Length: 84
Image (cartoon, rainbow, N blue to C red; front, side):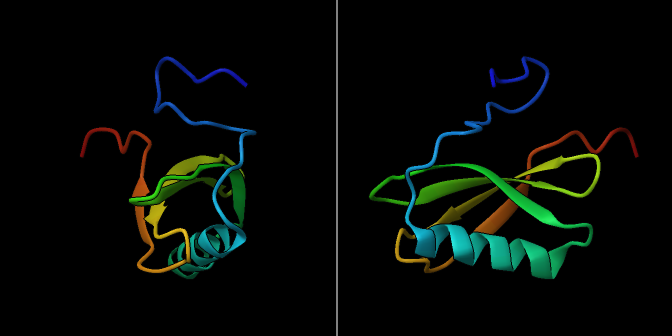
């Protein structure tokens, strides 16, 4: 799937991070949100791997940076929160 030009550049369908990294991110995001978490892609990096996820029925986009061994996962919402 090509990245949406109006949104963040997700790498959907490409998976290169370790299972430990993906599981750490999925578990952290699931504990912070409701509506179900789907992992849609990941990128390996020696510094921090990135795991791309979607949450809920609307597929809210999230990214998690994590050590490839699953250490220190950190999530960030990648969508538009609109005007407050």
